[in-house]
Structures are given as C-alpha cells and as structure tokens.
Length: 233
Image 1 (cartoon, rainbow, N blue to C red):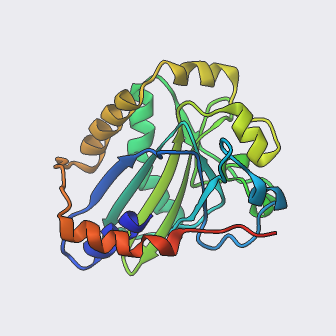
Image 2: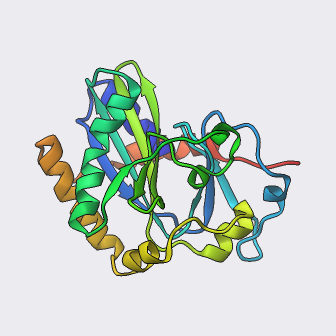
C-alpha cells in the first residue's frame, strides 16, 4: 500500500511516467478502504492459520477485500477528465479486453440497495466493478485522486478459498461454478500477460519495467507502518 501511494506521488510530481503494477499477497490479508470505519466484531478474532489475519488500510476507497487467491493491480495515471464513472469506464477497458482474450466476458456492475452498508467489497457490485455475464463479480476497483492524478486499485479473483471467504464474511462465496472452473484453467502468469497486452493496445503505450533503487525502497518501507490496522471490538 505504501508503494502504490508513493508511485502516485512520484507521478503527480512528474518524476515517473504512468504506472501499471500487478502483485499478489504473501499471506491472506484483509485490506480496508480508506474511509472504512466499521467491520464485523468477529474480524478481530480471525486466524489464518493459527495467526491473526493481517489487516491493512488501502489509500484508495471502497470496502474490505480478502486478498487470497487473487491478483491485485494498481494503475497510476493523470490527465483524465470527466465524471468518475467515465474515468472508471476508460480505465477498466484494458481489464475487459484482457479477460475477453482469456475467454471471460465482463461488464460493469450496478449497485443494489444497501451496498454502502456492506463491509464486503465482493458482496455487491457498483458501476466501478466488473462482473461476468451471469452476475459473478470478478474485479472490484477503487480510486484515490489527488489533483488530476489517479491511483486505481483492483482485486481480481483467480482461485479464492470458499471456506476462508465464508469464514471472513459469513456468507457463501458469490462465484458461480462455471466461472470458478474457468478461472482454475487460467494461471496468474497468463492473466498478467493478457492484461499487459491489453493495456498496451488500449492505452497505446509500451510498458517498460521500472526498478526501484535501494533509497526508494527505504523511503517506502519507512512509510509502511501507517497502513497497518489493528482491529478492536
């Protein structure tokens, strides 16, 4: 989380070009949206396995995401104009095209009544999220905007653990069997390759690897503690 916000600040200052980053999590972790203040009492007692579930706060908004068996992306970009829904529509096109090339068609979700009070990001789909044609939410996205610079975060479910999901959110995982079977045939590497190719085509860019210096890592690590969260009841 510290790295993603640092990338936003560096691009905002004109020190680096736009950034597209993919990553996964070393252990199951809950990330809370920046403004999320409430959560179920049992979250403070969750263990995975036999250790407290890691919890962090994202710099972007939205609700809680269980990062386990997912692929996370961070997109940092600037210069876009229009309403937030229009910006989401533009930035999500590479996700739609990338997953289409993998055989999964996606469309934007539509928030239902009461979604604001649902602590689970994947418990409902808004116009910023992408769902399959049968309504299964595959990608949840959220943004942080500073001036005209945007950090868009998103989690893509590849191989989530239904038992852990139910333990955390106390509802069954809302992925149809057909979608889950399709996802099992797609590796993390295949997903990244397809999304990189789609980003190059949609944004008309060439992606170049960026290596952080030891000094940059030191700066980022020094800021990491601000994103840690200790849940209390």
